[in-house]
Amino acid sequence: MKPTPFHPFSMETAKQKIKQAEDAWNTKCPTNVLSHFSIHSKWHKGPLLIKGHEAIEVYLKDKWKNEDCFLLKLEYWAHTDMSIAVQLAYEFRDEDQLWYRAFGNEIWEFDKTGLIHNRFIRVNDFPIEEEERQLHLEHVSFS
Image (tube, rainbow, N blue to C red; front, side, top):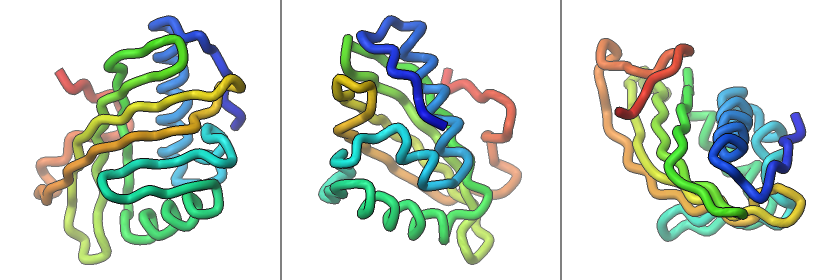
């Protein structure tokens, strides 16, 4: 699942890149997610800094070990020639069968090969009741 470079980005190609990333994340397969990131990419998540494919893979495996029924939705926010900003929402069920929803923003900086080399993310999650779930396989808008 190798992503298409598309840069410098137009609004249309930025949205295509976002859809590719969303599809990869929703497989819950670290290899699919990592195909969008350079080998030495850095993830900046609050005080956490994760560097390189090996560390990112460990992080994703640990994350998804505790997140059943994970489903992510990404929406276009802004772009430049070599970066894309997205709004995100995802829902998951934890090991105690409690549901959570997360909202946040990400900025992706791309290298010249079209892979993300810096990912800046801010996310807040909170518990929800199962009946409050909003994310299903069909498209959900933030608007």
